[in-house]
Amino acid sequence: MPAPQIITPVILSGGSGTRLWPVSRSERPKQFIALTAPETMFELTLGRIEGLANSGAPIVVANAAHADIIRAQAGADATLILEPSARNTAPAIALAALALEESDGAMLVMPSDHVITDVPAFHAAIERARPLVTDGWLVTFGIEPHAPETGFGYIALGETLADGVNRVARFIEKPEAERARAMLAEGGHVWNAGIFLFGARAFLEALAMHQPEMLAAARAAMDAARHDEGAILPDAAAFAACPSDSIDYAVMERAEKVACVPVSMGWSDVGSWDALYDLAEKDEAGNALQGTAHAIEAHGCLIRSDGPAVTVVGAQNLIVIATGDEIVILPRGRSQEVRKAVAALAERKPRT
Image (tube, rainbow, N blue to C red; front, side, top):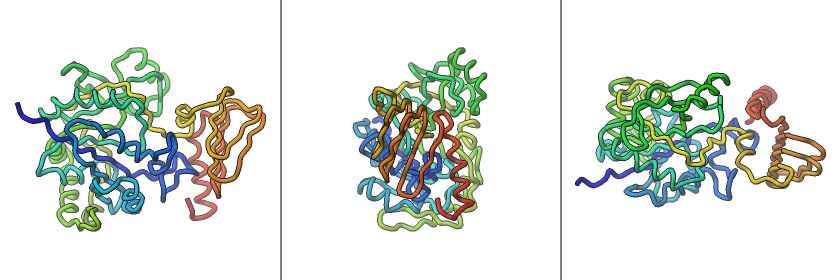
């Protein structure tokens, strides 16, 4: 019996940091901030691969501007691939796949800024996917939905391929509320978590078939890469010629052998202050208080201050976020509109 493929965790860390502004900024996006635990989200991502059977040291594909932060948080074992420009997830994953092409290891691709509270369930889902990955399948992990969320893409599950593994019938864009409710009632649909497991060569073969221009540019960038302080720096000019596209559009929606492992593992993409409120510990009045934050006769508020002491009196269902130089206040349920504040700030002064 052949030995199981070694799994290399590939952590994508290219986020720009606007959805959790003003705490998260372009120079220090949310993955490098302690939001849900004493550790940063990036450190939590590294921690959840500990104990994973037959796994190797991680590869981190990241914005070159964050190299020093990553080195400080990732430790010496991680290999860094520093993107000279942002070209979306498919080219970023292609760089890691090319680094693993010779060994043809399996790649566990994970965003660096998600929360998974049930790590054993995650590891068990990975084990269910392993046999299909060995057989050349591209596997994604789908989150069993508990609400008709409109902020996530969905995956429609097809035929059963193995215990706890289904063929992907189709990918579904972020739906309107009515369609989301219908899919939840129907069953057989999961949230698209953006977490993947596949062999390096299987992914490169899919790129060669469906995105040959992307593969050629990524290969040229890696062939001409520089190596500096343990990091791989792909050639900037070659990588700039790479088409920008997500892995879902570029590969997963086009490839033939695409499978999904549905899993319930306490997942959140922490994509808004509302999501952070849902995750946070709360007092008897339903207030989540973080940093130098206080509440008097307030209910259902998220109050966080990394700067001055903030006290909210007599308010309900507010989000109040304060840093040393910015304060934003929104109704709970509308935290995605923080982007309006970011846009207004950009008009006032060239600082984010």
